[in-house]
Amino acid sequence: MPLQIIHHPVVDSSLKYANTTVGRDKVFKGVQFFARFLAWYLNRINYDKETIKRLSSLKSTIASSRKLMRTGKFVEHLQQASKALKEKDEIARFTTVGRRLGYTVYLFCDSLLWAHSTGVYKFEQIKKITEIAYKFWIFGLTSSIIHCLYKLHQNGLKKNFFEKNSRSKNIESSEKISSIDSEVIALRRQLLQDIFDIMIPTTSLGYIHLEDGIVGLAGVLSAIIGAKMQWEKVNGAK
Image 1 (cartoon, one colour):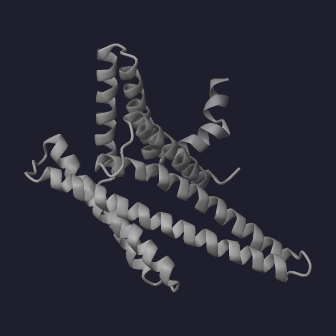
Image 2 (cartoon, one colour):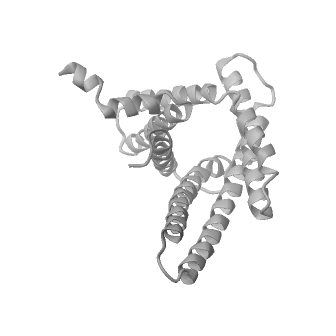
Image 3 (spheres, rainbow, N blue to C red):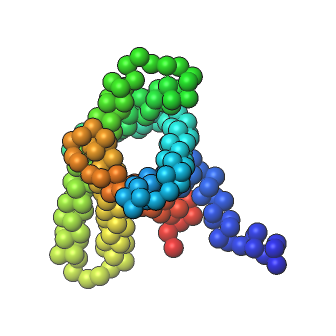
């Protein structure tokens, strides 16, 4: 019985997922922001201060761990920005490059923040670095949101074209429509994730005013969407 559990397909799929940095990051993100939400909620109902303190500590520890896991990832985004320059569609090119460059600077600053928080190196201008990180995160997310909206519009036009110009439902047109539908689903998920994510830096910079619990829930929902997308990427959509 124990061997059957170990070799169960779900266990295999879970191991594949957990073996990816993105997969682990989404799980940690979910725990981090749930701890943030829970600490906020317990504080509102005047719960045990020690428990709230532990949750806050858990949130901070996981946040630091996630920064470490993302160290060096800014290079990947810089490479993707370079590749995106070959995109023929101008709007898609600008938004993709904007997203990648935004994340490049954000993640680079994020690495500096990790070094500062762990005492590896203390930066005098840490507040400025934090502000720059959040601003470029917002820039990257905004670019991604515009990109998703644009691609959704483009896919809508393509789908209408195929539906109107296909006299008969042949296999080729059906496959193209199915491909468009799949891309639309992915774009909607990404758009929703970006909307949840952008609440975090905009609140931190004071651009919008949301309670910690709302930001916590937004982070949890973003993590769930991201985890699902990564799961399907690793194990296939089922």
